[in-house]
Length: 76
Image (cartoon, rainbow, N blue to C red; front, side, top):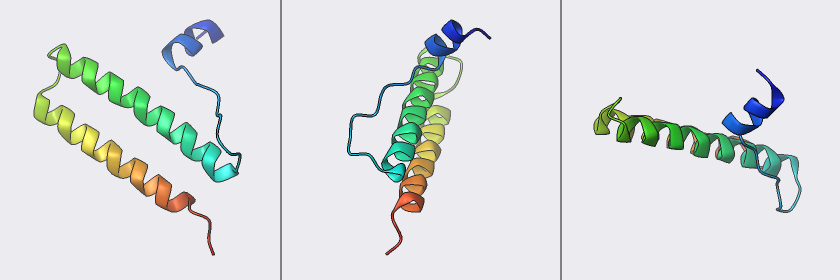
């Protein structure tokens, strides 16, 4: 797959917050979450998956994002 197609299909935005490795990783996870949610919404809108199936997938992704945030908290 060419770089242009990859950038179009998997867009990434710059990170503008306070730099820390945890923040950078969480930002990447958040962008992936957003991308996957948009795909699920498009599939549900297009009638390819049911509303209940879409809801279940979104709920699962949300739990994964919450878990990633918990795992990235600095250890004190």
